[in-house]
Amino acid sequence: MSEDDSKKQNSFITGLKAEWSLFWDNLIEDEEPATDAEIAFEARAQEIRDKSKDPFVTGKIETLSPEKIKVITKALSADRKKLNQKLESLNRELDLNAAKLESLRLVGGSQEDTVARIHELSDLGQVLSEELDRINERLKIARSVEDQFKSQMFHEV
Image (cartoon, rainbow, N blue to C red; front, top):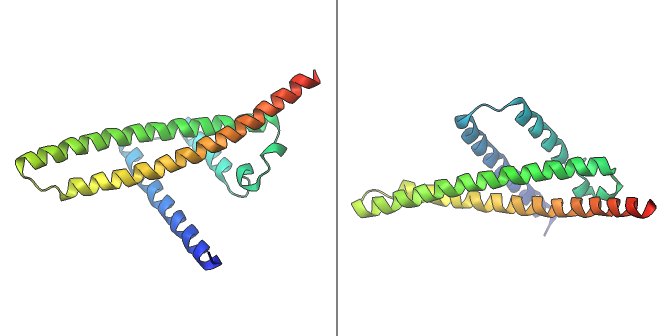
């Protein structure tokens, strides 16, 4: 893959992430305003995700202190919980749209909008599942490093 192809792919992925972020922001705005704790969590999560500081990207997670690894683990766990909640919500909406589609088929109504929405939700579910896999991998690495620290502390005592 050439450098231009790589840049185009990264640009596409960045654009896709931005679009999904806007989509979720709109869904969240419809529910209820964010609390101070949620805003603080998002700020911490964004700091962890910052590529220039991301120890998973730089390969320097082992160089972090046990306290920082613990903070990263908590943030990753919170991210995973949030993604699972989004996936559950997505599943409920998919179920509702599937039932709606079945009703439209029975009465002979127009199905295009519902089918399009089901496809959108399925695509979103795929993206969320991939993000959940990435978080699970990072969480696995962070917990492994955390266990190594605990093991070293145990042997030193």
